[in-house]
Length: 82
Image (cartoon, rainbow, N blue to C red; front, side, top):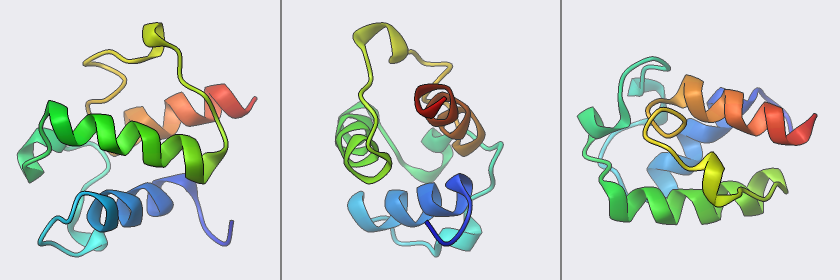
């Protein structure tokens, strides 16, 4: 991947969830809910992250804390890739 996980996540969030903002507008530590991401969209995002980053999330990985922000998602992905 040409750039970091956070940047890839922002692009993925905007593209797969059809958000009407630029990836650069997403702050790493702001809750995704602030951008209109709800629980239904999070399910779509989980599937997209598994495809892009070639990881598999267990049910226990999916919590409000791990899905809270770009930083939290990146940390979860790094843990899965380790």
